[in-house]
Image 1 (spheres, helix red, strand yellow):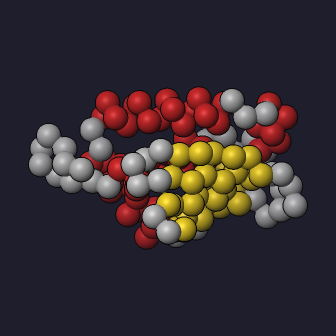
Image 2 (image 1 turned 90 degrees about the horizontal axis):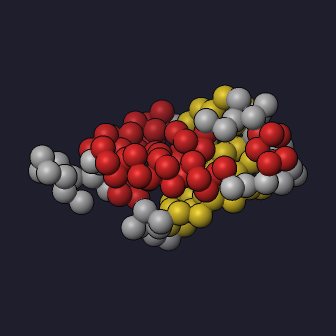
Length: 121
């Protein structure tokens, strides 16, 4: 996608960064497993028009906030590490906690996403 200033960004990558940023804020501490991957996603995020950033951030916050309240209480005390991988054309973002409650998210090429809580192992 091209922004009004002529720069391009990948919507899927920008949305992945927003999910990492906003979803990770529900945990006690959240770090990205790969600094290189975090930077790559971030660069697409900063090229996304500000209004689209705000709209997507609100969608992510609403999606996470609708999760079970007990789950949200449990994760707020946990540290997580984010892992990003591809399954075909979809990007999978995992908030891994070492066997405790965690989250997983799938983002398609158009930036649509589904966030799901994962029970403790």
